[in-house]
Length: 397
Ligand code: AMP
Ligand code: MG
Image 1 (cartoon, protein in one colour):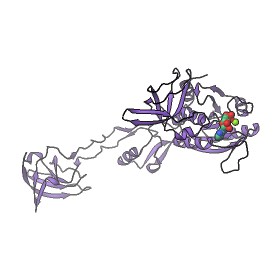
Image 2 (cartoon, helix red, strand yellow):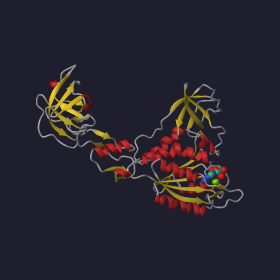
Image 3 (cartoon, helix red, strand yellow):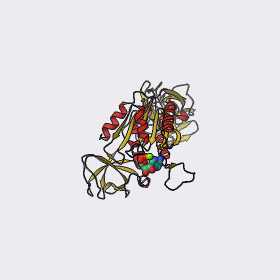
Image 4 (cartoon, protein in one colour):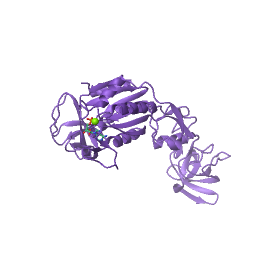
């Protein structure tokens, strides 16, 4: 038996380097992982500018508690630059975003102005009010985004504001997916007695894509030794990671396990977890291999715990840990000490804080428990049965 944390650490240690960087236009970089630090090439904003529509003046000319009369020397739209400078008693009509004219240090919003031809009467505001300072958002040379960050909409906006039309990101890892088992059939085909439709390839392909990787669907392999060997070799030749589901437990017909054992470099682990347990890991050629359990919940959970961080690391991501929180259990939960258990849970925020219950029956073949869940309830190894009211660790899904 191997603990979940040890299994994860050993698997991640196998990932030596991330996929190569490539250049992408910003419009197709959402969710991609930045391959290098990005520094601001100039101050943002590049000049002091007005935060409102109003009048740029010298604060010293305003009359505190009252209003003062100014001569209007010009009209500056956003995008324009005022050629002169503001002298004593002068005001420049200015639009939001337009650069501050030399001499002026304050903008009086137009709501505080009474306009007359060639003149304006302005109420007082604090010195420096309504001016956005050069560099107040970002300073030239500052690192604005770090390598390993997953690009979000606001990051793309920032890159664009710095004048970059494209960015350097890692190539998404390629994942070849195979389902194994004579009983497994493709959805849409007729299903004979004793057969089940393939669920795993679809949930695992979707999890692969949700992890920012590319899924190569290589279909179903029947339990035929030569076929399986050939399909695995083919998969390893075209992907960074090969994923199979099924055939890694101890049943007589689990020839997946036998074929993998012949390949060498693959270990069979019993992970101290529920659901999950049997897991094959190692390499086939240059590809990293995972043989996930066949039960649909177990295969999804093993993907979540072991494959996803591998894909993240391979894809250059710097943050590999999930976000967890603590919630109060509202029902008793059976738990066997010595292994880590993952219950499918429903997390709610109430006036008493976060509360969590299970989704009901927790069998590792009960895929509807994943459908009903919005979180995993993580019960650590030393823990025994959980009583209502006890705090438990929760990972929102
Ligand atoms: P195995 O690990 O091959 O012994 O499979 C364990 C259980 O998972 C069996 O009930 C299989 O029928 C089921 N199973 C295996 N592969 C899949 C799949 N791709 N989709 C849904 N269930 C599967
Ligand atoms: Mg099988």
